[in-house]
Image (cartoon, rainbow, N blue to C red; front, top):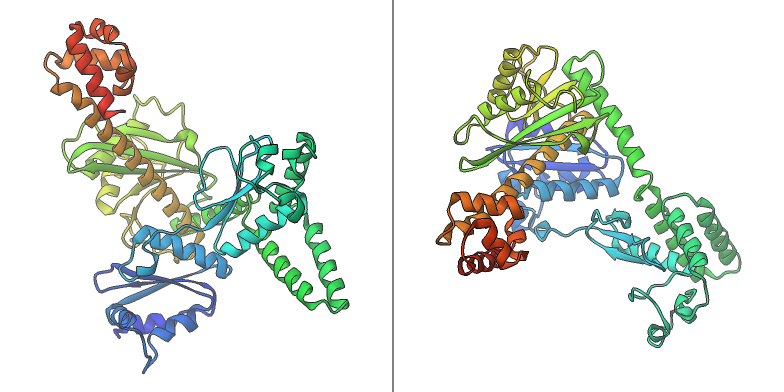
Length: 487
């Protein structure tokens, strides 16, 4: 054990959270969680500990340790999963299958909405409750709302008498049986809305009624029923405490406000930065260089102000010069974004000291001297400055660090998505270059008229021929080639 690690172990707190182990190169090799960080972490380094071979190898590799505290064990589990998916540490073998936690889903657009479990939360207009680290809790909540509110659990989209032939739910699960017309769509909708209100935490009296029933069962010596109700109450309390839709944004806003205050204090700002911009550069072997600019307002991402850029003045992979170009295009005298986007109170470059210096030089070049600018080095999550403050290390459980890294990760995601779409578009459009008789001018005319290879594939052969001024034989080849690549 080296001196750094020995001193680090003295500071591990007796609180729930996550720990991050790094090797001598600074690479993350393992992420773990614990209800009590100190007890769990020290167990790895206890003299005479009989570890499995994999754990022994990991312990011998550890050169440094970090930890972050959270509010409870459930939050530690979620944080651990997020960190593992992000860094893919070598020793986290059991988490490499990228399992996702369970959530409840309901589509209010259905005539008779129902709840189902899922592992992916999509932006599809449905209601989601969760995800939650405990699958039994989610399934217990689903079972309860179906029985308590008489909601259907069948999988058919439109339940009818035919579906009823294969279902006994109205008899054994207290279903209101909309398939038999026993309840009107309006009354069923009212029950569904009540179930959603309960899952959002807005009907605490329901759990109160269950507690009364548990007490009554215990008084009658029906301890088996009382135990079932006890377990159900515990699960429902967990499900409705923090993993719901409506109140989650309120919690994020509270954390964001705290994070902005921490950032202002760490950076010496006069007040918390209401508007933060973050820029990320993306390229593949120097091709298709692009940048993303994402914005957080009051600490939360605001997609209204996101922008994509194709790098125009830089050849090859040169992130610092590309960063300078984006600064000039965002705040220069000829910028069209000045009137469309709020001015930043803090500008973050994704990268280290070199990107930061070129960005600050670009700001000085265009006469902008009142926007605080910092870098964010990804490897160690350090806030970088180029003045007397030096590098700024925020605690791993700091909300200020979370605000900055979440925005940086969003900028990275946004840039990668745009970069990927450009590459795929180039690949699809290159099919036109392989068709004899279709030169650059004809290719541009076709894409301008039909907007994409997919549009060309859907067009009639005579339309393609007229647009590109070619005969129908070549037009048919164009249509066939575009249909083959999609797009």
